[in-house]
Amino acid sequence: MISMIKNLTFFKIGWVACVMFAAAGSPQLSALSVAAVAAIHLVGVSAPLKEGLLLAAAALMGLCWETFLVWTGLLVYPGYENAALAPYWIVAMWVLFATTINHGLRWTKRNVWVAALAGGLGGPMAFFGGMNLGAVTFSSTPLALAVIGAGWAVLLPLLIVVADSIIDSPWLEPGEKPAEQRPAPTPRPMEVGYE
Image 1 (tube, one colour):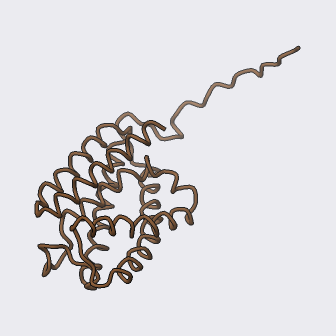
Image 2: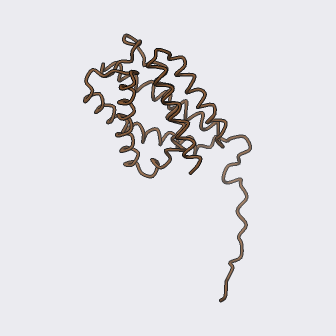
Image 3: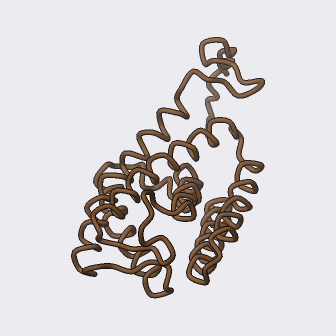
């Protein structure tokens, strides 16, 4: 429970720093704040290689989705009005979010519908917060939030599938043995208690 709270606290600190720096016109500091949180995260996890692959996969997903949103004209990032791709700081935000998938938000892995609901509600709420802080503007707020919600209702479950695929992959962390090479647990005799 404490590690979950710690993970979500670092995420929230990183999120606020990233959005505030972006809104202030300092996207480099946005990306650096995410990089700092991601580095702290990777140092503290038991499988940093696998977790790093998840962060990279999330960055790619984020680049595609955020660029799609920019191309539709539903949202505009100040300073990036005519950019062909989404700003790098919002892609970094996806890396930041991915630090929570196996940790602070692992409860979303219970069920695809739980993940879809969490994504469908959480995505628009985050963007609405970003809009209020000045990091993004919408051409039509209700339409943009509806599209973001629908997208995140699909993207969060997809990101969970990616996370689980990486964690369950045969790629090994240093010193880790495949399950079939681990020694079987030693059976203990049953203890019978008499009253």
